[in-house]
Image 1 (cartoon, rainbow, N blue to C red):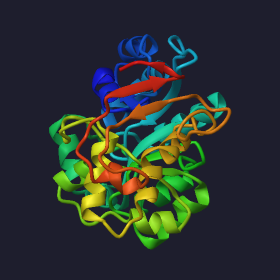
Image 2: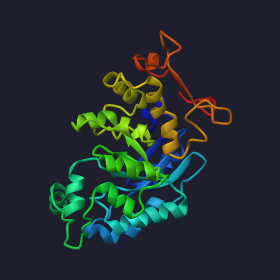
Image 3: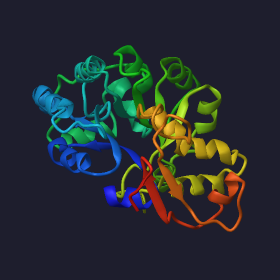
Image 4: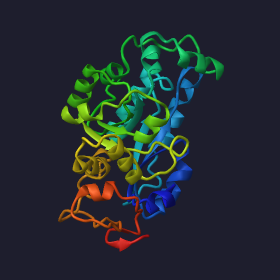
Amino acid sequence: GIAQSLSAGVTTIGDITRRPAWSRESLAASPIRAVSFGEVIAMGRLRTQLNERLEAAASVEHQNDRLRIGISPHALYTVEPDGLRACAERARRMNAPLCIHLAETAEEATFTRSCSGRFKEFLQEMGIWDEDIPLADCSPVELCRAIGVLGRRTVIAHGNYISDGDIKMIAESGSSVAYCPRTHHAFGHPPHRFREMLRAGINVCIGTDSLASNPSLSILDELRFLHQRHPDVAAYDLMAMGTIRGAAALGYGDEVGSLTVGKAADLVVIPLEASGEWESILESTQTPVAVYIDGVRKL
């Protein structure tokens, strides 16, 4: 993953991991900057593992100048409200970012409103369901707002099923949204509301999700995919979603994401036939031929 990201011109990543002790050792030794979000799952019969998993997620053992630690309560159907609250409080005490899969599927709202539907069936099939799982009786975004998950250090992964009211709540909270275009397309979700989110003042950035649902870990490929399907969106705005907005979502906005005096000299070299316009990057099929981090060539 590190090698693929670097070859795609990605110098800063947000990585969600269930095995932080292993993955963070690799990230800490790599040239890439990263936020390692330790994933927490603690629902039903797994709720007794909350403290153990949260401690592992919040461990700063491998943290260094390039690796920062974040916490990721996986989703509303895998972490109960008390667990979500504990994750959010720990992240605030650490001044660490938090990432949660939110409004990724339509079934999430069914589960949070009535503790029924496909996610209940899944938990039963996995032997995790028990009758002590609490009923939230509200929408996914409303639940996250009520228990303090939303905030300026929060990254919402996906946000595929978002209402007008949700957009307002997310904008007021200052949370970012990581939209994963090709994964969104692969699962056949309805059109993403990233344009409405941007107009509402939400910091929308681009993610790749994972190779399980995506052919590559290239943010540039995601932007080119979006440009082909949404030519009405200004190329500059798309590029911002893949650069400065992503840096801001991960808490690296003061260091990377733009070529600005005082920031790190992270550069990506892409050969182009035309020059001078952002469209020339998005309409090209050329891949990076050189990547510099802090002004030092790494590819």
